Length: 123
View 1: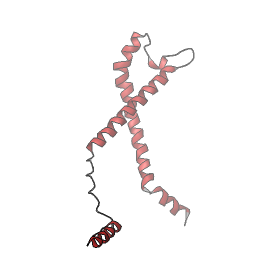
View 2: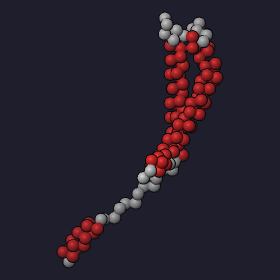
View 3: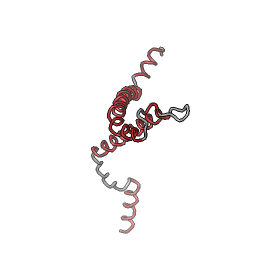
View 4: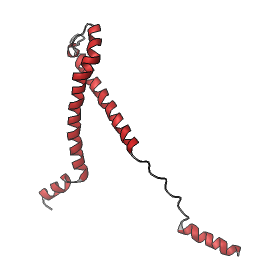
């Protein structure tokens, strides 16, 4: 088997293609969440709190030489991503129809044979 054929078989497997799509969608989703945090959450929620604490710019928050403002921003983005993914999974579970309960299984062939023997012995 040639190297190119092996690579083609590997690359075109369903799970590899699914993973590639997931990475692309994840990157786009990360951009959307970054915009949500930077353009919506920060101006509406964080800036008033930062102004009250006399810290106007989140990225400039420092303690000595440690820039913890960037870290705080990354934690907020992570929490928002986790929350949105939680909501998406919860919505998907709600949209799925519950599987109907499996019909009760009849006796196995061995059990059926044993019941026949029992019935014939009773006669």
